[in-house]
Amino acid sequence: MDRHIAPINRFDADDVERIEDQPLYSGFFGLEKRRLRHRQFNGEWSETIDREVHVRRDAVGVLLYDPACDKVVLVEQIRAGALDDDVSPWKLEPVAGLVESGETPAEVARREAQEEAGCDIVELIELHRYYPSPGACTEQVTLFCGLIDSAGVGGVHGVEDEHEDILVHVMSFPEAWDRLMAGQLDNAMALIGFHWLARERATLRAKV
Image (cartoon, rainbow, N blue to C red; front, side, top):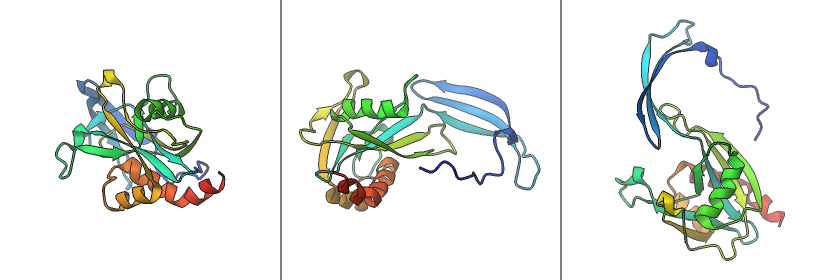
């Protein structure tokens, strides 16, 4: 990633007046009502506005790839936010997890690869850092590609205390790509990660 390009944004945090942050709910995630004013593109200040914001810890995703075998490792688990899905609330995704206090994103990637897939990462490549839904959520995601040896990877994994029941899938890149194109990998981490891997796959395989 090239972080040396100057930002295009005209405004920054100094152009926002945060009047009040009102907690509405506190649990595994939080909900706040934020009252604010901000500078507008016409140079004037906005009226006071209220916005409900889902307060979440930052997250990490890691697309596990074995360049020697041209295989990817994905995990399948039930997702509460997809209970109304037309096909299934069980989703096929890259390994992912939340950043705990004191952890770096890279440490989370390696921990979650072990917890969810029983897999050691040989090399970790940071792809992107992004907000999945900045209009309503504080969460920022760091997405990696983790190079692995997929031999022996599989089975059911997860942290029992977190009620995780995670099935590991190992499949060829072409099969995974076909599933992506068929709409079966319908989450942002998979979409972003696989489009990066499609571009870089030949280079990664040439280094093996």
